[in-house]
Amino acid sequence: MNDSLSRRALLAGTSATAGTLLLPGGAKATARGARDAVAPFRTPYKLGRLVLGGSKVAGSFDEKAVDCPFVFRHDGRFYLTYVGFDGTGYQTGIAVSDDLVHWQRQGVILARDPQDPVTRFNVASASILRETAMDAPGALIKVNGEYVCAWHAYPSPGYEEGAAVIGLAFSRDLKTWRRGPPILRSEDGAPWERGGLYKPYLVKHGDQFLLYYNAKTAEKDWHEQTGVAVSSDLKTWRRHPGNPILRNGAPPAPDSRFASDPVVMTHQGKWVMFYFGLSGTDFKARELLAIGDDPFTFRKVDEVLVDVGKPGSIDDGYAHKPSVIVWKGDLYHFYTAVGGPYPNDVRGISVCRSRPWG
Image (cartoon, rainbow, N blue to C red; front, side):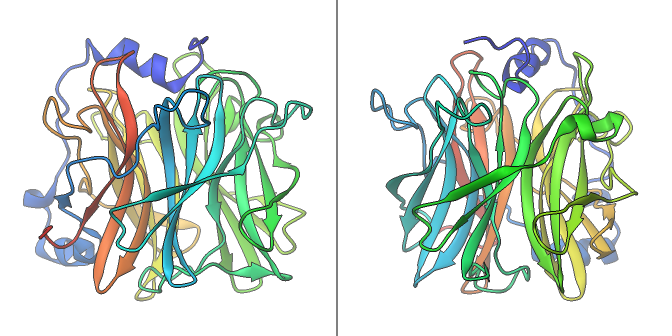
């Protein structure tokens, strides 16, 4: 596998010589009012193990690793779409659960197509249009009788190799999906996104659709930031003129290299963006938060929501790529956990929540 352009190889090559990250502020340094504002979004209690990992079944789409969780509730059960990696590229699967901890794999729902130049190596569903309110059950929303997912696809074999594009797919049963053409390409964007697009998150706001996504610059040691595009019909998309709406912080901020993988919701009249930051100091990935009064303007919270674990833990390298859901008053925060030394690191999905585990 050629890792020359991948996130995984880039960061592995720099983290070994990285210094210690000095986080700005943090919970102890945050004013009481700010602490209270962040309280609904904290999930300090890690499960401490993977809820879904690589299947290790030879030839399966998720044999090597799983990534990019997206959780929702449907027909009285919880579902988790995720990306599986088989050594060639990404494909999308789904799992089901009754308790948000024990998951049963249900197979592939979005497969690569060797005959399609866009998805011949990769296709990753990153989100399905669902209720925007964080406290809502997490049900999906149909448009013209169909569910809508936002996917991205990388043009080359390997782990996130090349400049990805973003598109939509449509389904009536969550099993069979009809893929549309790409709706966003990096070459049509501004310099901050010319290197390629990453994980899209789709939101319905009034009569508009908002597509949040992160993207990278074109240089070898790139930066990632987050923007948004707007549409009224899911066909014609206009990039927001204020992009990127979430920019890298100044070193040593925990998002000085990446401000990525947005998950955008509403809560008590505010807009909330969960995202992950990658530090340019220690090259660790952590879950962060930004809050806004509208869907285009966000203020970063001076606190790490989910930090990396201690050496030897499942997430001692990265705790990143958020997906959240509220159940019986508790907030569950799913994330991709990466632990261990490269290239033998283990990548899988774990969860933390707002209440201690029993």
